[in-house]
Length: 224
Length: 348
Image (cartoon, rainbow over all chains, first blue to last red; front, side, top):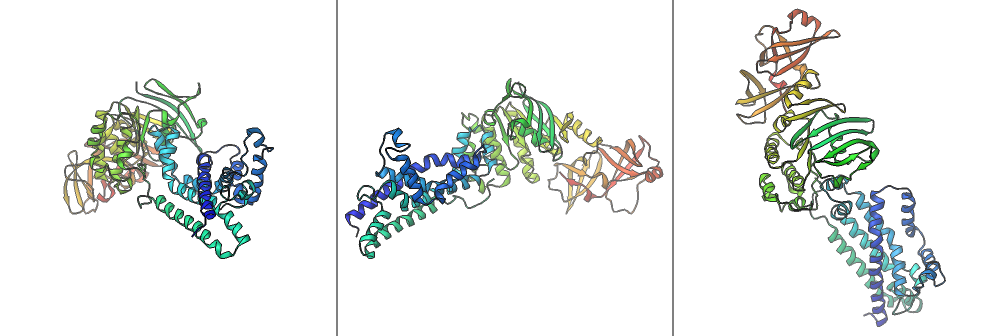
């Protein structure tokens, strides 16, 4: 069974990952649509910038966040809010690291939506907003679910950036990966097993659920 | 009131210049593929990428939708034009019911449209489970239920077989009687043009080359040899694959027609398949031998282009060599026989 500290790490992890999901989806959906459906100056730059956390070592991402959020940092000094070493900082770090996975998955799905259906919707009087919410996103839902699961799993497993900006405070910012790390430093490797099982189980269930939700309702591939 | 448009559209290396006026009822844009018909519809609907590619003026019911001089260009979703596509374009993630309800608005004519198009039994189905004809009926219903100020039809029946096409043409005529909006209908089928429209415009290579009644438009096409001869005949008898038709007083023989006894059928005939004779030949396999008279002849650099009129008033044209012309002693207004195989007649 899990110890009290481990249960608390589980709750912190879920709280951090779910919050990260929200932080990732709000800018991620419009950004994915923008990258898939609009051409504008700086498109390639924005695309590369979005993907940056995917290729940077998470520690570097954490360092940039640290520099931004510290009370004397660029953002911290302006907002006057000390977020460092809170669970919210961990969620922010997880969101940034998971962001490219979500955006890339959703973007690819949007690019696969037949633009002729969007044109047909516009010709029925649907505004661009209505076209996006009633046609494009529903047809891209498989990519949306895949992106959510990938993002959630990535957020759940986040380590490098989290430890820099949120520390490793049991009960407050210690997530499962951090707890596993701590336990592995101090105790017998066998004691890690329950935590490893829990995090693997959560990820596995997430993938299963997404596979079920993302499955197209009808089997035909034709869109007409 | 009505739809007035004067458009100049550039797409790739192609340029179309179209001027049209449509009141309520069907205006058919007729022409071969590549004539600029769909380009004209895209310009009306506002779905050609890049504003610079379309110039001119569109006024629908006194509302200016496009005026390149004063810089007005209303977005497609605000134009009030509803379009029916060749490929239906139903939303695959929505049921037929939700496709029909896609457009916002009162839809006060729901019951009427659903019953006219016989959509009642399809409402719970998904687009992927529909046949081609059912899909197009839903697509037509969806456009009609979207509070149209004008309707644009882009060859909506071209992928359907004869009997389905015939059925939907009937629905369209019923809808035209119920709706009082301008309807622009693009097709390359003479049958659709004759069935639907009182007025038609012939497009060729991006230009309006003729407008008037369907008969005038078709006659123009024939006199310029832009297309096959077209005969309108009534199926009276069927012996296996062989079909017998009435063309005015004359009998016409064709094969493998998809039509029922008593139906009017449109048949295409390539000018190349027509043989001219001045006396009825014997022992010949060609089953059709129709009397007519020569209307005019043009010496086109060594070959003679001959246009003839049959007893029912339909016209045929063909080319003969100078030697054949001399041997037959062809004269304007002279009597002539047109011979062709029954297999040469192709149903529209």
